[in-house]
Amino acid sequence: MAVQPPLPSEAVEETAPQTFTLNRAREELGLPFAEFELALQLGEIGTVAGGAADRPRVSAAEVARVRGQDGGTQALLSRIELVSTTAAAELLGIGRDRMLRLTRAGCVRPVRWYVNRYRALVWLYLAGELREFAVARPALLAGKLPSEVRAADAEGVDLRARGWRSRQVTRLVQDAPGPWEEAAVWAALLGPEVTGEAVPNPHERRRLRGIHAALPYGHPGPLAGPALIRRLTVADAPDEVAAGLLALAEALGRARAGERVPPKPRHEPWGAAPPEPAGALVTGRGVMLAPSPSPSPSPSPLSGAGADGWAVGERPRRSLLRLLRGRRQAVDG
Image 1 (cartoon, helix red, strand yellow):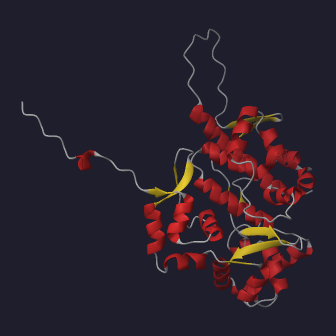
Image 2 (cartoon, rainbow, N blue to C red; image 1 turned 180 degrees about the vertical axis):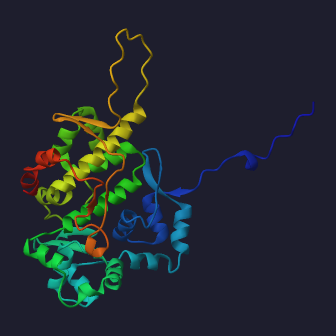
Image 3 (cartoon, rainbow, N blue to C red; image 1 turned 45 degrees about the vertical axis):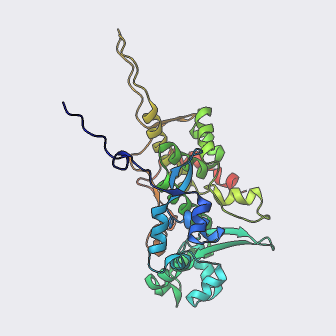
């Protein structure tokens, strides 16, 4: 029988796609550190898992895509341009007071925040989103403000922190490679106290903290104290906490199911015990069944989606709301 000659090594060897470390990718694109970090946060530059420490990397194809798009890196920089409230008002041609009332009502969600040298909290917005907002809702830029905005202003409602958390959670959940990573995002949003009650297993709590101890908050400045960071990064409204609990339960249900090993069959003379409901979350207050859909953040109704920044398929049970009452004052501290 004739022996087939070996194929050239080029034909049989599978070469892995070339990837760069984050710093090398930044240099390849010629971006400053802050702008490159923001582009990663906003999903403008995609990453892949890789490396011995499983750190994210950027593929050569992604670098080429950013370079090859219309305008190249300059177009990217224009899309991620950040402006303060004062600069946003000037961009939209309105007064700063009106801009403040619109942002507090959740019409535009901030992207970043920091504490300046005067110990004032500064919110930053995407200039591109502000331009889109001006085109989509020109009525909010002139004349009398809608009753919803005026009522929110009169009641002292401020949805800026919640809008920022909504944006952060949305991106982190989308980028989560598995259910444990997704559950860690919701645990970070809820904070250690609420998560401690919802996840009684200490091993699972440690695992979640090891992935995300808190929502990433960038560079808040040296004057941003722990109390302020906690107030801005942890869910505070009862319905926001309820949505996070439901999403955490659903993600944990999928994570546990993926690791569950079927037990060996054995004789049960009196019949086997009924199985635990899939996705159940056992707490000190009973069993909470996880919903099928995971609640996802949504924008304000004034900008085309929910002012509270969250959309839940069903309203929480009254017992759950009673459970959550009293938390808001402790978290707001």
